[in-house]
Length: 345
Image (cartoon, rainbow, N blue to C red):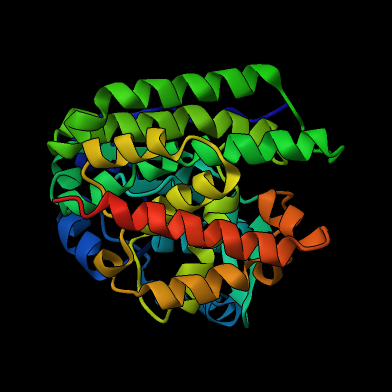
């Protein structure tokens, strides 16, 4: 029997009451989120400022949380994945306090870690005991970060395509027509509230998070299903890992969505309309990188993708004769398309 995910505890000023019964807990966070929440929490057993997701770093942190009955992630992906890893390895309960809508890390049972250049998933992390969203804290995050979270819904535009081609190739990807349809429904709804995301409205940022909560069940029951991450995430991760820059995850995903949708022949204009309406950034110069860097990473993407156990369109380029030449040709056309989209103000 699958353990149910907790309901999202949400509201303005809710954190203090939601955390009032906590004891013997350790906090994993980063500087800005910790400054926002520390006055709202009881005294923690320990506070860890998460530095990175290298396995050796994570292992070195275990001693500092030992004895805590619960690990609390406060912040976004780095804090939450660190908290998930420590909760699993130290056999502790887990709670997550969301401070932005920038990604859906709190709704998955995988903590992504690194060994050298390899991206290593730590699977079957605990389902959180609590998920807390305080609107006052959410609206302290830069609008750019909150807006970028819409990419974690829009990525289904390309990942559903990848999921289908894997299924048609005979790969065991837990194909489920109902999950495919419900995910497509969420993509269609995103069209409607993308302008509110672009306007910086709190209710739109909350909606991004609530969609992540809906997806949590699918992540748990269908761990092999690529309904919400595929080739666009593989490219985004490669950009994050190999560009030498700290990128906002959703913005890297946006660039991945546009390029991969064009490479797939999968209506990139639909994705571009949502990105523009939500005022999300996607051009390399907005992310702090260059097109030559992107091109080099895309052309090495088949090798990078071998470290990710997913069958996507990138797999197809790696396996078929002439695939690399085809990828190069399709990337050139995709780059031209994205460049002509211009900048989002």
